[in-house]
Length: 409
Ligand code: CAA
Image 1 (cartoon, rainbow, N blue to C red):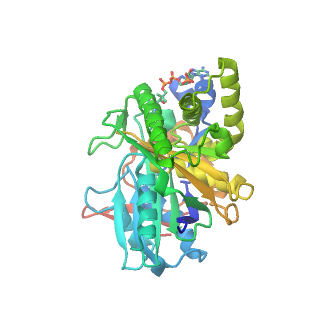
Image 2 (image 1 turned 180 degrees about the horizontal axis):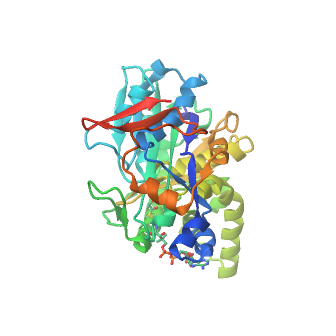
Image 3 (image 1 turned 135 degrees about the horizontal axis):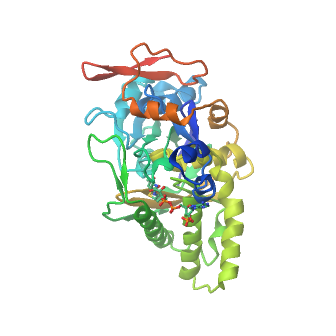
């Protein structure tokens, strides 16, 4: 059975950031709530001349420029987003145009809240494995701008960014075990965004409960699909070298890991006293989860891209060390659908950086007032001059005759 998975990966975040301490000051909140309570330091802020299209194209462009993939090798272009720019024309179509991908290519936008990126990855993997790809590759991009209303509980958990992945039968970075994944779905209003609203609505505490219930359900389905092959009777921290979770805010990954290890122990009939259980979770979290949250702390929530921002962090910092090792991934999308799956790091893991560390280091911090002005603007200034330090390739230059227009920089 041939391996399928991620051959190369690129990531992108906008050039502006807001410190959570600055937001806390403006909102009259104890900054420790955001830092310790949610685990966040800064969040990425998209200016009015960036949107889901530019973020996606800016994440994927370097993959073509440095020869990691050729334009005529791509036969499937899937863009996952919940920040669509048009009700009919998909973000994938704009990205296809901007990147000048070969016309013989199926282009589709996928939506299922934050789960869309994983839906796209699994669809691409199955397209390759089915033989329909005829030797070609898929480009999967997860791209989003996370927006909540000013002064709402969700406001500190915003962010923006994209991750682009070339999926092929040469999983140089990560072989995805898509044949034995576990899914869970249920109809819930935990987080949603009515048509024509720019900001999401959320039932915050309920959304956390929904996420954790979905984790439990998806893990049970994974165990059933796996038939004991991967997990056997061993505790999960002995089975996987790392765990990546959908991360709306880093503390959520802690809650998820705590719940997962608890469920796993219960399913194996293991009885631990509370102190021993807490020690196991803390040790495993510190070495197998926390290091891979480094980018999430600085970027915030990137919805569909969030899990893959975690993958970028893992590949960049620990990829080489973990080559050949198995990791577990959990994807959650409100509404809801979730998936728990396993993957194995490839021989090229860690060899080519995602680009995120450099982008994060070169960002410009904005003050609260500047953030509020950027957020309030729906269209870029007509006289837009891209600021020095912009490291993307494309910008949104506004709408003409109700058609969105983009241009290379
Ligand atoms: N010092 C240290 N910690 C503090 C503190 C202080 N002064 N004040 C509060 N805290 C801690 C609290 O104890 C709490 O920690 P625990 O969760 O471990 O108990 C944490 O800070 C947050 O405090 P609250 O629960 O009181 O915060 P809140 O009511 O303002 O809401 C939230 C938090 C629900 C996550 C909110 O930010 C929100 O609605 N976010 C958007 C929704 C979201 O991200 N949901 C996640 C699951 S759904 C999903 O994953 C899909 C998606 O991407 C949206």
